Image 1 (cartoon, rainbow, N blue to C red):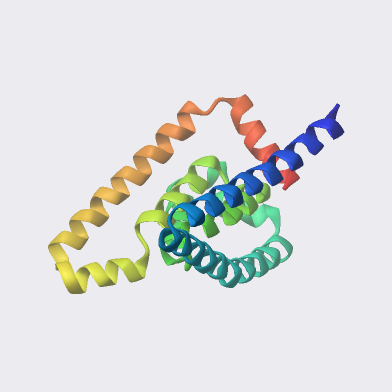
Image 2: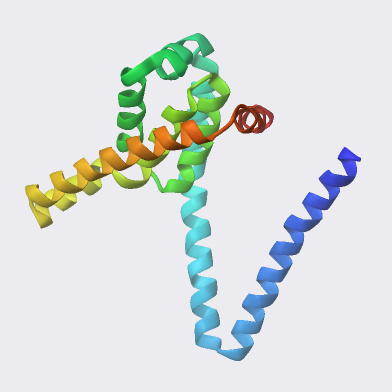
Length: 183
């Protein structure tokens, strides 16, 4: 039964690719310039991913091998408290790369024993409080705007992480961790 589900998932993935290619071809036929823009944008995104993801995976491989689970649990696990949340926030804010690069990082952190709350904080910080973005905002929009947005982000990220941590049941957590372990 499990092998049958695996084959169906693989077929579904290839089917999605085939449908996407067919839609792009139809767009190309209907409106050549728009089709060319779609292909150019897709190729640019693919090129970006090919440059961004390999270094992230190399760093994650090193993290997985070099950082013992006990250290990860100590600094980012369930008992890490505010220190773990601050570490997760700093890691997310200092990280380079687009948001899709954060999900493999989250997977490794979960696999190593980080708490769900701290992983959610990392994802929130990665998506909204990048240090280069803060510097750009400070230079172009001023300190008041930048600090106001940062304060709102801190409250929002912490609140959402806390709420999600409370709403996820034991079964949900176990399922998420099992998926992280299996990947």
